[in-house]
Image 1 (cartoon, one colour):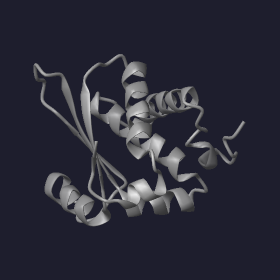
Image 2: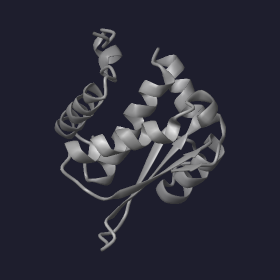
Image 3: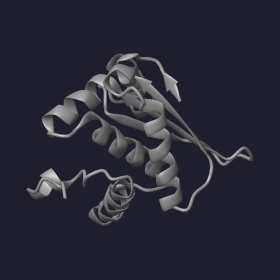
Length: 152
């Protein structure tokens, strides 16, 4: 865990522990083992990464950078942008911690090969995200899109 922006810890004092718990759960659910580095940064740094690696000159909530196969078992890196994540949680009526859990699970699943480019891929990936989050006691992150609150 690398925390470049202290607002992450202000918003979620146990941000590193929470992210580690989710990353482990996502790896277990997808039957992968290995290490992941998570960078907690801001929109300016995220925008620079997005431009450099994806050619998109804007910030985004989470970026995943899969590592080439290596003997150390490092699966890749994830970066999260504070301002974008905070705004999305507020706009979607989610707690900051629940949104963070979702984005970490999402990022880890990208590292191990899941994607959402097609409807079928999205259905598989979103189902796995729901399963991971439910196992951690977090609500369905896609509930608002279906018109329910996802809380039980």
